[in-house]
Length: 214
Image (cartoon, rainbow, N blue to C red):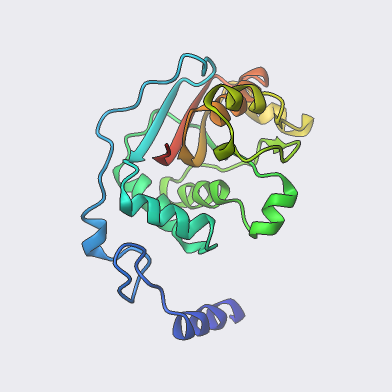
């Protein structure tokens, strides 16, 4: 009951504003939703991403997608994660998936931000697609921000960052896993996570991202 009252108060005092056009009422108004530029062909998986069986990227990195990502990650508007998940569930053509998981943040980074943006999207997809969600991976160190690294450095940096706790390994065996992140850049992060999932026995790993970066 308190959560309902709290959400009502927040929406009354700080009503949702469209990330695209700033009109009041929702984080993505119907008019802006109709302008979303979807990626029509699945992207080619980079050669270095040997453990990724496929990647689904929903939108082109246009002005609207950029605004959604910035509002979500850097203004901490957690509701944008639900918007992204809704669009993925409605419009993406996903391969066979048994279980969803998300690219993890380091605990200190997640504490600073207040949430893991990839996990929020995955949890909403869990409901929208009626697929189980499990936090399979952990991030062992914070490291350097991906945006500051050159392309080849990202591949080298990420391979030592992620792991799977022993108690989670059995949940990977024989599973077709949907690995969720908000933005696809080089594929280095997804590959590093997929490598650990495959080592733990996953049958296949499929990246699922809202948009791609530059």
